[in-house]
Length: 191
Image (cartoon, rainbow, N blue to C red; front, side, top):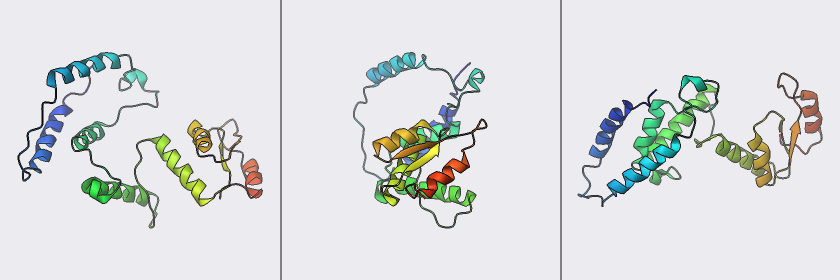
């Protein structure tokens, strides 16, 4: 079993191309990056990381945790060399445009013509933002979710001080729609 190392050659070529795009800048030589010490730290980390499960291996096919696709891993590594910041267009012009393109393509998958969104670093952050927006749009209203929903819904609702209630599911994991309808009829549930 071996980790994918062939893709590192692709990353090296992409880094050369990225670097060439900054050729017009004044000369600059980065200070000593602490090569020997950096290698020592990374070798120690590599040793410690061996205590994780190798989810990329076929023996772990049933796990929900999988490594990112090789192109995603390489694209992330490439971007981290310049560490763009998409909080505003001036902090990451190219990556902000890429984010808008990705959100547009996701919206198109659902047939949405009007949409607003951005990419999140994971499901927990996406849940946090969605619940925060819901709480702002419907202050004082209750969040209801299936008892099969991800645990972060209830936890994040607590952090945001949003009332939360679970709705029972049947043996097939389907939310009890009669209970949901009764809860919605009370008028204190987000619409």
